[in-house]
Image (cartoon, rainbow over all chains, first blue to last red; front, top):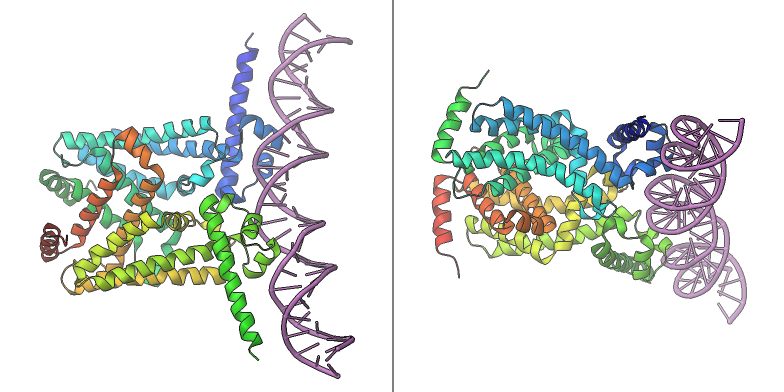
Length: 227
Length: 227
DNA sequence: CGTATTCACTGACTCGCAGTCATTTGAATA
DNA sequence: TATTCAAATGACTGCGAGTCAGTGAATACG
């Protein structure tokens, strides 16, 4: 009699339903302005029930973020699988991230809202652990490609792949955040096209970590794009 | 009878006292965990009185941030005044910001906590205006130096000074945030010395926006430091 | 000098929300 | 049909931001 198994499945399903409801509410209102009562109503459950499945509002927020991390990882993974060379994998990774930013803006925002120490206080250790694993997966994928690039002589041997990753990641994210949040400000009061800035700085950073051979290959590749 | 003037002075003084009390509490607890009652107690006033001087907790937070902006501007201004050449002004600006980060970590954190839309909701338009003016002042100083650099042939003519500023500012800040928040993480689990990463990436970015002549001068300067 | 007026200040109050827990419900089992 | 037990409920608690009617001291006025 599979009663127990069915119960487990139903529990798991309920967890998902709650995350789906929470996703809708968090996307619309953000962490601060969303209330647990709203989420409960969206999930067609009482507030108490939500707390049977998630320890706190912040835990639930992280659960939603984890879905976003998975989407990002899958996008990266798919893109990388298609690219035949390490250089192309590197370039397609950058493109994928821009696409993630364009397609899944709400998840992007969630990622960067929780950068903060102070909000982490209410997160349970278990959920933090899970969340870190999700992020680690994405990180390892990216660093793996950079490492491969170094081995192939595409990227400079004197810079650590993980260090390259930090710089690329940080710079890209902070520019994307500026684009997301202050696009109009830059455009109108300063006449700056942030998307162009992003393209330029990506180029700049990529060339900076490449060897001479890498740059040559890169320029050849840019000169003859797939389209 | 200067009664009115005296009253005004006393009011201004009270505003400052409140900001000082708030600074202490916000530094210690952050925006989220600080309570207005705590701030009131630190200021030796009642909560109601605080609200006579500042419209909301977030407004008060911005008032504290503005003090930080002024400190930063003064550091920049002093440093720049000492430097004899544009190249040196540029380098000393970067150093000053690192010093600000080291000396005034709490203000640095405050700056980056309020990057977010959602928290801006409760800020009054007036305070936002004032805060933007403070930030504008720092921005103009930096962009002015870059512009001068372009005019002098130190920096590339084909990149807009404001664009350079965005990239340098974004990249530097996000690395500093990583250093502030995850220094131990990077150090221990990945063996990365983030301070070195910061130095490297600053060099890298600076060289990337320089002309050949600028780079030559830069290297000569680095080779023969003042000390 | 006594009275009226102003105004900075107070703190008890409201309101909204995260999180809790005693009670209820209903499905599985005996 | 009766019993058991986990899942679900929603009224309740506690806390903190923001409010406002009331207080008293300083100032202006007669």
